[in-house]
Image (cartoon, rainbow, N blue to C red; front, top):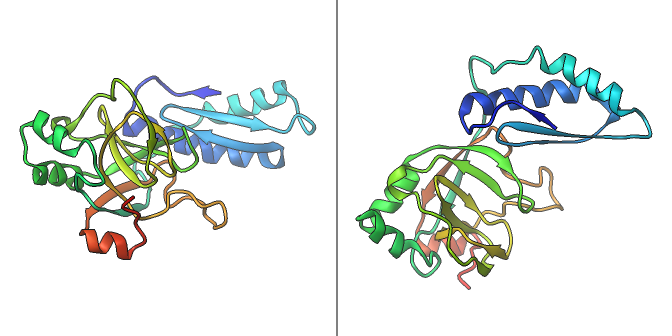
Length: 215
């Protein structure tokens, strides 16, 4: 594991991206996988092809020359969301806490662009930041046993889309019909670390047309 700091910001994330590309190049076929996160990169290597000392030496050499690029290269991915209490169980309460109408919460959530800082917890679960502080909300005291696939949620100043049915303690505000993980297609996820995500509000009818599940 290589660490680049202990904060969540765009410059650290950009350095993680640059390091991930450089490590992938220097490791070649010795590499099994790379897992970039907020401020670190996990390197998984093939112990039948190389050893820890060799890997550490190569990583140390390449990382020492890595800095955040002046211009952050990324894709912008637009994800449609149906915002409504019937699919966002915490939307009304979150609006009440923020002293805003539901439309105000939706406007704040969709007016920002969010950086993909990490992917984890479950395949396709992208941690996005940062949510406007007016609609930031702490995790639930008691997580739900089952959160529906596609649920759009907020926890503190992060937001995410649940890629599959799973337990979860984030505040649910809507639902996205776009699959966030499909192992049968390539790429298997619509977003990658370093991308930018923007949410676009859609109607109930449009949500269903796009394959969204209201159950």
